[in-house]
Length: 321
Image (cartoon, rainbow, N blue to C red; front, side, top):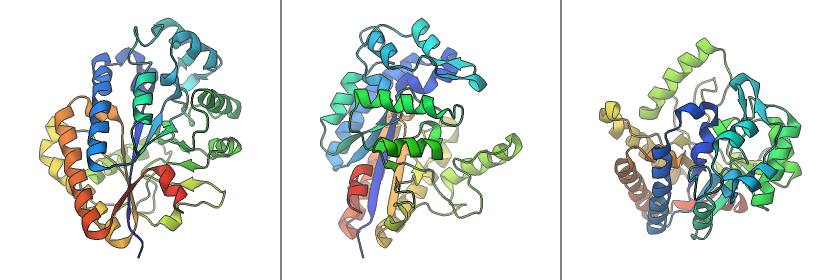
């Protein structure tokens, strides 16, 4: 039997992930996220963890002038009442020295220079594929990302909005690997689907319970499920590592047990378990979340010793198939 695989991916977007709620941006949390990323890298190095970082390409820009040259001037989301170019021109600082939550070329280079860490794409502008299904706009976004990060191999969809038209465009640019949404053991897609509001409200409750209890089954999967008929590789998510909430502290042990159980089953059966999160999720309760991560990685080391459970990035996973 082949060894099981433990995959970690992270969505690095800083304030770009909050453009649609710009008036509620918490600058201090995003500044704390920068500190969290350095601490995460130290922990990954300590435990020998390989990971894929889906970064928003705009973070790589050195200043607003470079950003505006690459940003699609026509990009807007009517349903969100958001014109991205207009918001950037009016609200974002001129460079990293004046705006640490929208520019982060230093962080991306720090990640790149760490062994076992891979830079993937989270789009150039945190592109919402469901709110804007204009193929020309998405193609422009990919081209802009290629200018700041040529040769990237992996795409992580913002808000997990996987779209077939986007996959077709990515393939034209030589990008075949992506993170799809997790499956479950019931006959409805509770993650990543698009439903009427009343159905979505019900599913939100299911998703909440699913964080703590295996009501929809475990989310590990076989390596043979990764290659897709259209030539892409869906290294799909298994679970999101959810942030700590003080009011739900009594449930935190169940959250960790849920993750441990799926990791162990994947290790024992030679399957894949893919954990993901936003570094921003660690900002409010950094010490608690980092300690929880260490507990998870202690379990990984134990499963590595017992069953040969192996840490791979998404890119390494595809290369091994």
